[in-house]
Length: 171
Ligand SMILES: Cc1cc2nc3c(=O)[nH]c(=O)nc-3n(C[C@H](O)[C@H](O)[C@H](O)COP(=O)(O)O)c2cc1C
Image (cartoon, rainbow, N blue to C red):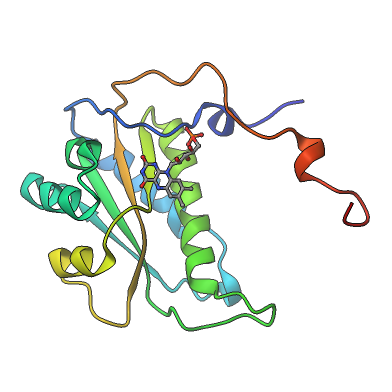
């Protein structure tokens, strides 16, 4: 069974090298987000790219002092600009759309030899204050980005397909 190498090779990187991310690589990672699908193609997202070391230290503090948030050379605050649109299915599109765009970024990062980690453990009000993000906008997640200093885990800890998939009916 052939899987995309980036799907197989992506893992949560929690230790980063000091090397800066080259602008062209960063742009391709952001381009992968730009091309992501979104409900009604609304593209109601905005990505605040933080490279400034002092700001990253403040973001680390707002993210429960997870050290690698300050260590990663890039932290991206992934925001939903129209957070109140609810689809017919009852789900809000904002966090879903932003999550898809983030997943595109994590996979493109692997292609670039870079690593990422999703950060959901943060205080949104503090992040908004640090980055000057206006009130109606929601910060859905942070994403760290940089060259990995750690090694991928030997295997992925995942449930088997037959546990998470049912065919034709819920069983
Ligand atoms: C929505 C979301 C939020 C997460 N938040 C954090 C976080 O705050 N800190 C952290 O170290 N990892 C965080 N993770 C990473 C998960 O722990 C990780 O993806 C999971 O354990 C699977 O490991 P893998 O990414 O290496 O495959 C988050 C992942 C997701 C998808």
